[in-house]
Image (cartoon, rainbow, N blue to C red):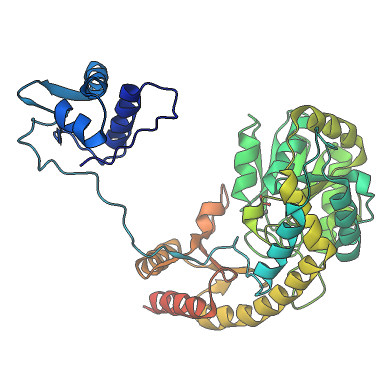
Length: 442
Ligand SMILES: Cc1ncc(COP(=O)(O)O)c(C=O)c1O
């Protein structure tokens, strides 16, 4: 019997409800071409409705071309050879294969207190009601106060809460900036952050390649330079002090804005976090921060501190577009910040990464060259492209996903692997590293 139910409270005629449900069964693959359908008499009896209801459904579906056949010869789903073709293959059942374990650069380790902290945050939220209108276009004021305080304390940024704009993550912040910057090309590190490249290209701007490890000495053609000074993505290097000064001097001379993507700078475990570039020249630097690396990328929450000359246009853009993260997310993050959870999770993640990073280095350094100091939750390894490809395939065959360095390159001629160690469990990490080491040793 077909899984059909009729809802007498539904204002649509029963025949049309029935037709709708059968249509959905065909679209979902539950009914395949050639499948035989019951006669209108049987169908009406099964469903306890008048036969005219079943006839209306079959007439409708026949008129739309979903079913064929006539009184006496039976009715079947269009596309097969008729009732005899009952063995037409069905859409394959969804597989239950184990998903790949991602050893990626983007998934953070999560503290065991996570669930309790979230429960508290949601409980608090459950007794609050959303603001009635469009609230402050920059985001929840109480959250901006806490973000400004934390940026001062952890990143050396002296910011007023009024200057912080809450975003739905790094690329959302970049999109806001692109909306108010001149429509000139944007220079991005190469290799560099692919999401930034795509976000810039989607605005119709050209992307200029900034060799990631070299000083930036020319931005005459660009309205902005997108950089990851605290932890070059994906090569891992900290931008040397003299390169920072050169970049700022170049941006000032050429009238460009420096966009600082400060994605995982808190996760230094050898030295204290390197202060943000924006703390040196706030007038030149647009600072992008994110909750993705400390709390969760699925939250879609970040913050932007723009240079003063862009702020009025940015506020106006947000006022018109209302393009802010959802209020419950902002409220919940405010509770997490206020209760010290974000500080606690950063501290414990730092300890975990400090313990895991040497394990990754011990496993892979006999076979590959480390591209930069290990910080954050991933390390990048230089290898000939064919060996990197083979290792990636061997890892995938064994259930692990790693990224090719070449996928982050545009004109840079670099190859190797980017190996993340935040997301997996300890056992998964060790197993993944063993697979990679075996492949690279072979
Ligand atoms: C270089 C870089 N910046 C930023 C992010 C975070 O982006 P978002 O805040 O949009 O989650 C990532 C995540 O992997 C990243 O690799």
